[in-house]
Length: 128
Image 1: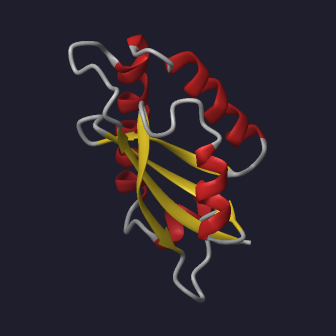
Image 2 (image 1 turned 90 degrees about the vertical axis):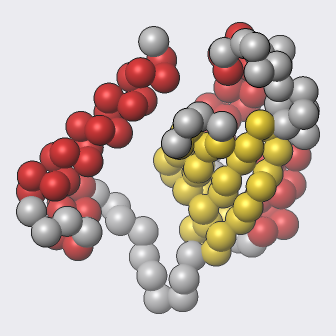
């Protein structure tokens, strides 16, 4: 299995006058994505930037598996569409814990704490 970054964007059926959770088909799409997390296919992910796209880390055999799994999404094509797949670089490995993240990606504990606080705050703001 290989790790991929998957970027999804809004599809043509999205109504820009309504919040994402008010879109037609949102509940079915959200339940589908939750199932992908429960299956271990989606490792982590969610909205990024201005919320016009989502970024997910997924584990799959290849690009075809990703495309096939996402095509099963009730919101596929209309509510969301696949924009980009990025394969993990050979020899790279996913970060498995905050301790590993702390030692490899940030120069100081404070930088990691700041990053995690920002992510937590952003995620909770999306739920409000």
